[in-house]
Length: 313
Image 1 (cartoon, rainbow, N blue to C red):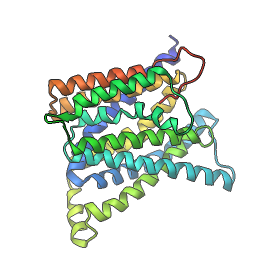
Image 2: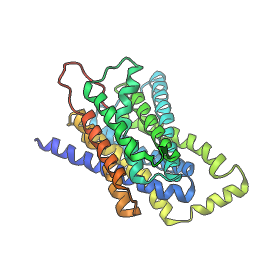
Image 3: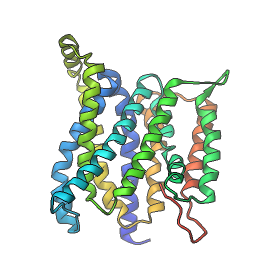
């Protein structure tokens, strides 16, 4: 393996670790200031953090797709807003799920189901998937049963919300796939972060702030905790701007399939972080479900044997 591939592998593993730890930050931060507030503030921080990254990447790569006219700018805004809407849904449903009781570790694995949802959504866009992907779908359903279905065949509402988050995440991947190569990725990330911050801010005002002066005053007091800002900075700077930059650099010299597999390890790191930091506990049945879903994620990313190209998450 070349030095560039080794470096890329290490950078993507670091990215997965950062993203896995973000579930802990989201869980503790969302509990303190509210799910919509956490989403709004983290994406605001991520937007600001991306601003100095854009010119840095422009100089480093020398091949950025810089908007040159009004048509290019309109396309960038269209792409960023579209991806930002789905990013908002991803974050909001994920935050609500954890706020209502889903552990950070379980949320990490349920969110990672986007890898299976992507080929299903792709059917509606006439994109075929390989047999191994559909095998992963069936295995994931078994894992989800063990992870989410309690005694009496009941499913927690919070788990369903995180599954909706996974679907929204898959939709965002499809949106990115539509615009990739047409707009600069760093600028796309910045616009989508800004869009998500604005949309989450609207929800924050009506729900977390209760659209009242008293509600705003109470909300403001919740920001006094140092722990809240540590969580926000982690989610905004590290899991947002930093991890995104590492992903771009690390993925450059790796096969996309290998890169997707490495990044999907965030689910395993989310469980480890929840266990080490928050003291999350999973039953033997739930741990087995996590293992089964992880196997499905690996199977879904196996290279095709056929000549036809499958849709990769």
